[in-house]
Amino acid sequence: MVFALVIVLATVVGHTVIVAVQHKLQAFEVKPPATDAKAAASPPAPAATVNEQPKCPRPAPDVVRTAPPISSEADQAQPTVALTFDDGPGPSTPQVLDVLQQSGVPATFFVIGQKAAVEPETLRRIVASGHAIGDHTWSHRIPSAKAGWKSGTLTKEIDHTRRVIVDATAREPCLFRPPGGITKGAEKIAHAAGLSMILWSVDTRDWAAPATTKFASVIRKRAAAGLNQQHPVILLHDGGGNRVATVAALAGIIDDYRAHGYRFVTLDEPR
Image 1 (tube, rainbow, N blue to C red):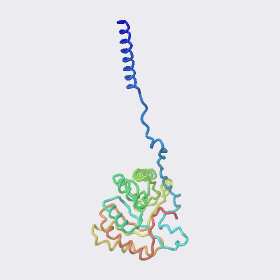
Image 2 (image 1 turned 90 degrees about the horizontal axis):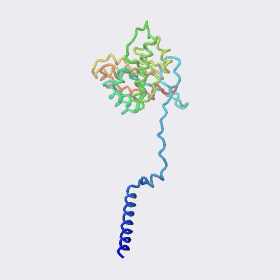
Image 3 (image 1 turned 30 degrees about the horizontal axis):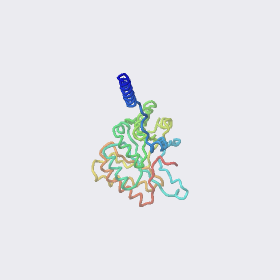
Image 4 (image 1 turned 120 degrees about the vertical axis):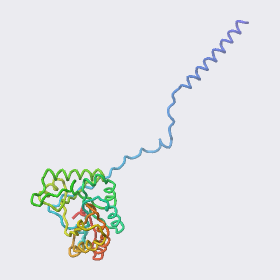
């Protein structure tokens, strides 16, 4: 009887040990991660769409001195005007942008690479506001009209500025304006870079204005010379010095051209 009792106890103890071991093994069992039913049912997110950058048109065969006409046949007779600003970005650029925004007017900015490199946010604001950006060389060094541009020098000046514009805005510039309006030796280089070379038809000489708003009326009067042209390009400056007179004159210039039925355009619009 004692022997039978021992057998029973051994059986009970053995069963208890086996059950305990099984529980421990289950505790260490690696379970698959829980699946979110909602996430599993959802399709994978589509890849981000990359906006294609607009390609520059073929460079204009000749130096451009007129604003693009309206492309639609019904409006081709309407006069157009292009406001252009050189030598920025500068301290006056935000004020110029403010006036343009308040008036709902687009313009074209020819930027100097050295200045643009330290003002990427200003370049982004220019593009975001619907304006065009052109290349105005890296250093704005002006050669003599007789000697003209050295090919290697101008190529580097244009390319360095182009890189700054692209890095800041993800937009390729399509336009080039040579500092001082010196064209000798520049046209071939600009075309090789895929740029149309732009000059102007009206020079306000605002770059020579004293730092006072009293000179605004003179700038406005000079800008009005384009009212005798069908598609004038107005030369103004937002950099290169104190441009308080230019800022003060800008709203009046816009009013004058609007009163005469002109439409404001950028120089990168198709011709």
